[in-house]
Amino acid sequence: MLFEAEWFKLFVLVLIRFSGVMATAPVLGSGGVPMRLRAGLAAATALLVTPLIPALAQPLPSDPFAFGWLAAGELIIGLCVGFVASLVLAAVQMGGQVIDMQSGFGMMNIFNPAAETQFPVFGFFLFILAVFFLLATDGHHVILRAAAVSFEHIPPGGFRPNGPAFSELARRGAWIFIDGLVIAAPVAAAMFLAYGTLGLLGRVVPQIHLFIIGFPLTMALAMLVMAAFIGTYLELLDGMFSRMFRDLVWIGRVMG
Picture 1 (cartoon, rainbow, N blue to C red):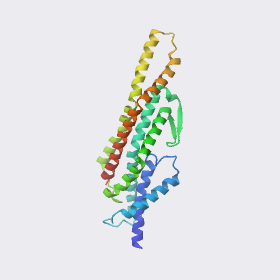
Picture 2: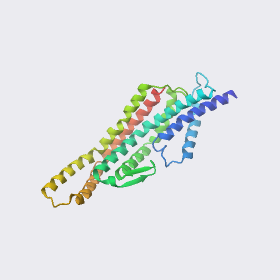
Picture 3: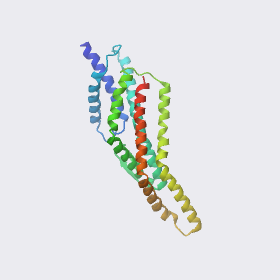
Picture 4: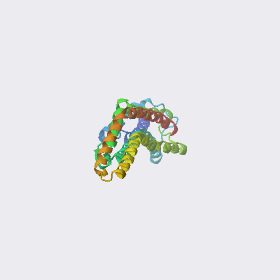
């Protein structure tokens, strides 16, 4: 009976860590995935992982407050793993929004059911392309595997507040802005040249209605530049996801 109680407490901690991952990870934590499916996937994964965890050095506490503290630590670890995994899609979304603002597509929005929010046209296109890339490379499996491997470095209940680790995690969050600007750079550069040319044309030929010809021109130019650099964008995505996979291993080691 005591063994069953210890196993159940261990299972609850494992389940909470995977639940944190399911809440924040891309695709797995999407609003388009039903809550019951996410809960069932977290429970099934916890059932598979719990028997593989070595025996703990000390028994888990039975006191509700002490056990609740351990559960909170497991939730923080899961949320951090999901946060690291979501950085790439956040950078893609930001880059798409910069492109839309510069090209004129920002006036139109499309509802994104995965993020449950309004996305501009290019932001939605790049987001969907990144999701397909993640699924094609089995990135969702890598996220779950990273959460499972984290138990080798941080056993259930082994979370310790680590200030330097959280600071480094915040610095990794800055990559959202860096990667977003890199994604938007080709189109932003083309828009800079286009607006400069239109400005000079307006000074030379004042009779031209720049607002009438400007929007179609910048929109068409943005689509052409995006089509020309789509291969470069996919290579950039590959590098971003590779860095994200390495960071998943890193976060699973430093939170204990």
